[in-house]
Length: 184
Image (cartoon, rainbow, N blue to C red; front, side, top):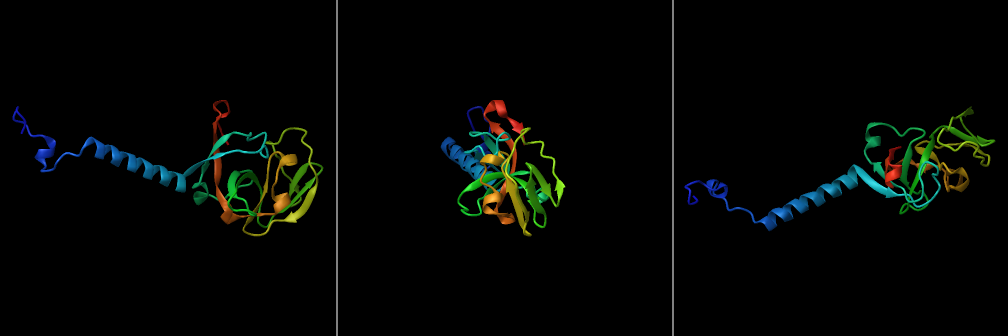
């Protein structure tokens, strides 16, 4: 009891109070653990190093990728994803899903065709011209990936289809620079 005759909380329960340093260390440890768990399993930031996704993503943009999006739904045509580069899994790439396994991709007169039907690509700049390609049938369990900057993109036209197990996650937001913050 203190001089006023009241119990102190630590004495009331028969415990010694923790030092401020120990409480601070515990708080920091919990925060670090939560940050690691969130980064490993839920969200991860990525930096855009090239212009292959312009005009959607610019060099220097920073994005947040949801690692759990595809636990709840299948990847969809048009999704922007980050994945391990099939020819060097130590490198991460960001591209747009164009076609899924079993579909046939062709480009004619700067127009994308999936299974012989034209695909509307509103995310491309008007008047963009790029080379013909295909037709190529996408193998099961893979995705055909293209950059939005079709004339400056190392993508599935060069290295083939991307295996599903290489997916890291779905790009959901540009968070930097501040004037470009937006959902993807």
